Image 1: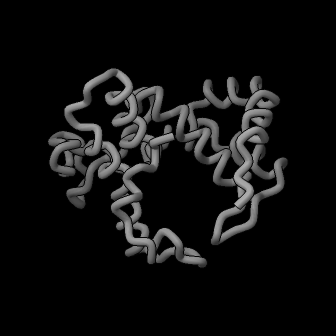
Image 2 (image 1 turned 30 degrees about the vertical axis):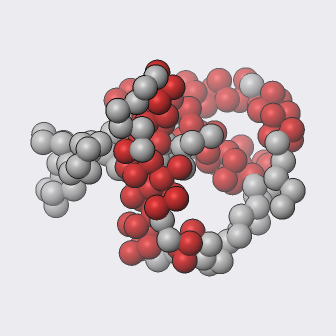
Length: 166
């Protein structure tokens, strides 16, 4: 539930923009993962530690093209040895992404695509599922995609139970 908690620090001008955000706005939006993780620094429980990992890594991609990548959670600066030629942090990839982050990445995309948002209509279920299947090994952990499809009836049941009627 707290994977996007860092969005509290992002301007509503960006968060509630009815159209697509531009590249500068996207760079600001990407900061929510680090900002959210920083809220759990000095955690008091395993739950806090897991929440920090999820907030930080739920936009990483299995192929390494996600964000924020290898950053120091305290400073937001790239971790030495994991920096691209432009001085930016390399994205985490594969099993370097914590399991909780990989799970939430898949659940978050499923929810985002299958739900209406201020800037888009919900996608048709067949399009959502085809996108997830096609992104196995690129965006998502392929093993988790298999588990997702083996549990799709339960996932849909949970989604229907918590429909946002606003």
